[in-house]
Each structure stands twice: as C-alpha cells, then as structure tokens.
Image 1 (spheres, rainbow, N blue to C red):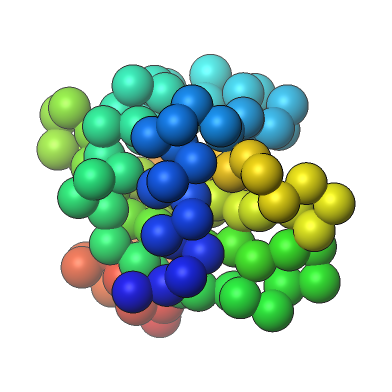
Image 2 (cartoon, rainbow, N blue to C red):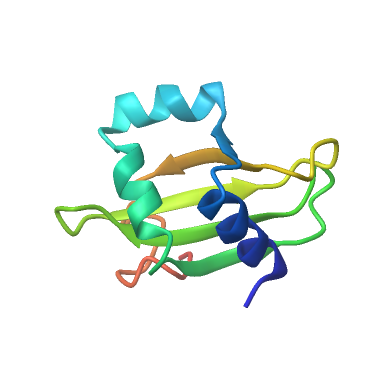
Length: 106
C-alpha cells in the first residue's frame, strides 16, 4: 500500500483534511458529494501513486458513490503542511480515457 494513502487515511480519520477551492467548485459542477468521497475512502483503490511529486506526495484513488458510479479522487499532502490531507481534485472517469475497470489509462 502507498505510504501517502496510509497517511491520507489517518489524517481523514482524525479530521485533519481540507478540500481545495478548486475541489469545491468541481464537486458542485460534477455532482459529487463529500459524504461519498469520505465514505469511499475505506474501500478506495489506488489508481496511481505520486510519492515524488514536487508539490508533495499525492495519490489518485478510485471509489464509488452511493449510486455505484465511479469517482477518481486525488489526495495530496503539501510539502509546506505535512499535518493535513488535501482533497486536490475529483472527477468521474471517462471511458474515452480509461478502461472500464477505471484503473488503467488508455
């Protein structure tokens, strides 16, 4: 398992997480609810791991909302604030860009 993803889960469980302004806008535009993102964290699967991202480590995860629709969520831990998980962005994966398991890019 990704060290970043483990940290994200610990931070979220402790309430030490925050969405970016970008994420809040995208959630509204894409009809994705924070409750689905947080509930999905327990069963989320790692799609891509970026431990060496220059802004701080991040991890792209796959989870599903209450209706069973897939959601990709990018979580990060900023280099200048390593005590909180950032909900960086989220979206519904598209079959034009992803295989139907939502884990592998075309």
